[in-house]
Length: 568
Ligand code: CAO
Image (cartoon, rainbow, N blue to C red):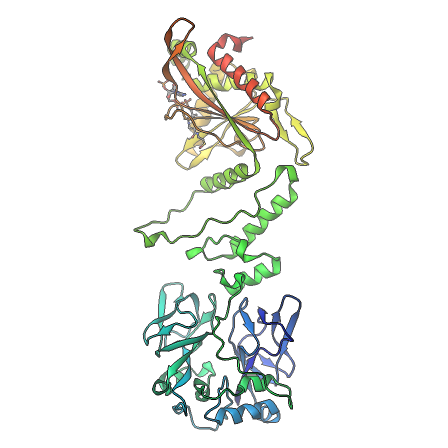
């Protein structure tokens, strides 16, 4: 049996290509010319054929990695006869036994004695393949972080990479000291004991093969000859020889190229091979996808959510969409600054977050402010207290606000519209349902009070109490939260003197109400104390003009300042 390392062949002038498909699994048998893997340049996709029949030992690259001519990409095991019959393999063997040769891979007959230490000859330095030491398990574990870079001087024991299993993360220490020439793995790869991690340049003395490391994993398929490589003479690599057509000169050595396995933007994104594959199949640029996994890792769900969002925006009319191409907020590991705790969001919180972002990005907001003088309204409301107790109804300012909003919607029908999904029409509603934001322990919900123009203050007050109670108990039915024409968000009981609410699209307006306060108001001859209610009206400027908004707000202020108008 002979192990051959397959390298990237001459790409006809293309410098780098991306590994886009690793179609085989270790142990899969292959025939001559069978496709081992698929590479893709800017212009073309190319299958890399197997030079001989045999079986795949392992890939040396991950999907998504960027490679160049001469880079090792796979190892195959070739039957003795087939190997002998392949001229390239013969050449490999010659090179492998030439002490001064720079060798990427070498063949090794099964009958030969087991790996004996190979000294670096005629050189002060040698190349050393660095393998994963015994990690105490036969399982392959995901590589989540590469801790070295090409060119780094690494001491024995320094962390090379970090692996993460279901239960723990583990630092993989270097078995040798030396300079990193090449990194042979990418984040997201699955690694096990004996897998090759990097190629180091080590001082000659240290280049004696550590048998314990090399011989331990039988599946590793890196023969001893491969491991200690003299670099004195610039001669062809065995791998180059494998890839060169018989009779043609071999390609120049590529082994010393000081470049990580993955250098494209996409390859630098933190995502595993499966995610990269899905992204490639869906045509998603991973650089555009915010990662929600640990350390910003992109998960399959992130890719599918990204696609859903793009499709949603694509299907919506130009007039009702927007917000694409927004750079993601960087993922930060806050634990580096102090103790943290991750709290799962409730379903309502997640929905609210998605809706708020959608509305904030899609709706061109304008917010208009005014104060309503509710001195008389409050006097009247307080006067209802005794009767309210008899009726079992508590009347708060919110009931008057909802009644006044209904009347203002009737007088200003522009606010009782929605943009049609075609972006070409407006839908005028001839009903008047008002939503009321309710603050609950599970998050924000908006039950809707229907036909407010047909109801009096007692009925509206009773409904506020009923719906707010249901909202806080989590007992609202979906139908009770649908059909709103306009929303009221009252923070009056909590405090603050103003805020800018976000339109609850596809509604086109929302009123934010803050805490009323007694303030001095000039009545023409003197300052008088009046109870003023601060209000902020946010509206969708695609459907509403500033003039419409001014009229709506002025009308609302008039109704609240003199509630007799509500009776008209
Ligand atoms: N200024 C001063 N006092 C006010 C007020 C205002 N604007 N609005 C209400 N109050 C008073 C009420 O009069 C009541 O006091 P009294 O019992 O002495 O009359 C007290 O504050 C408590 O009112 P309430 O909160 O129980 O009832 P409500 O009808 O005012 O509000 C509801 C109902 C559902 C709107 C409210 O409970 C709520 O959840 N508000 C939060 C809405 C919210 O979160 N908005 C933000 C959305 S965007 O993030």
